[in-house]
Length: 326
Image (cartoon, rainbow, N blue to C red; front, top):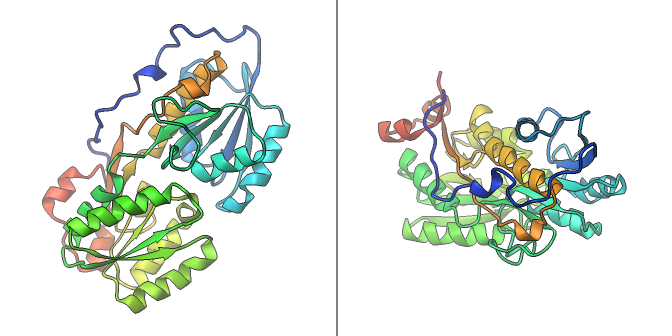
């Protein structure tokens, strides 16, 4: 069920009316490339299209959108990005850091907009959040306090956890900041961490074998395109080993995971349409500040909690935006 949402202090005011920016040329049909992490029915991309329509951009009328989908295979990003660039697109929408870097590696000089990047400065996508300076900009989770909050919520649901295994993709440069943030928060909470790299889906089973051997009390998966394509398998493995698990996307809870806390990806993709709109009207991506999410969601699966023998505190349920009941 839907409940109230969390709003951060940082807003998206500049994504509003295109004041002071050259109007789009009348009659011109712009070509937008979309490098999707998942499949054509991705709800995030529908939010992006809806955002474009709200700003006056309609497929088949004044824009053409060229899609390429990785279906969770992030090693295909370079190939797919190359295909899109050969189509002479005007702007490219990507999900996060790996996709953006893949496009850059293909020689992309066109504007690139990311919707959910982790650390654009540390990964080299932007010179700074306020002044990206290059051809890449968008929305980042950097500095949002996401990982510490995830630990706080997971510990509230499962207070006996003392050892926590963290799944992460070392090929994603944004995860360096995420891991530092997680380690600092865990130290303050007196949690012992086990860091388990997962570079590709086939390594997930081995990671769970290691964490079971280590006798982990819970699992936290750092948001990433590779792990995001494996939400159902992470949920299944966690349930099999009776471990409370946390991820950043609401879909994790919808496929059986215990908890999720993170930015609304749908909202991020809708806001990404604002960046694309301004770029099509003449703005330079290097002049558009990187922003943070403005909408966060906490999701809890009551059925999963009961199967783990956990009683979710009422205070946590009250804070939840989405609850999967019996």
